[in-house]
Image (cartoon, rainbow, N blue to C red; front, side, top):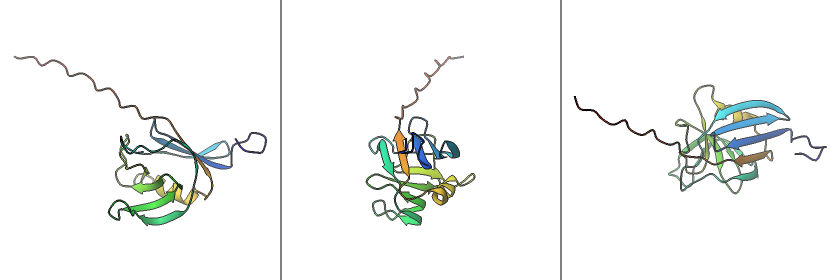
Length: 140
């Protein structure tokens, strides 16, 4: 909540690791919803309240072989949001928050919309879906 009588900050973002979704708000109005892929097991994206940092139309990873990270928005002390060609419906990154470059390019939309200093809340916990038991085989 903001300092103005309980209204939420004008621009703010919610990341839900349980559902692997990003929701961007202006006040109470949803302006963008996107699937994301957060950090996989052993490289989990941290939870908590953070603030957006610098933005880069094209950033190159200093950790992962100079990997390209288009439409990147840094989140100081934790991770980056960035576009990626492979955004599965489960955690798959090294801790960053991947957003699709395909479909309607939500990564670019988020990059253009985001503002330095806006609050970003990351919550939830990915729960691995239970696999259906295999049906017993029958011999003919």
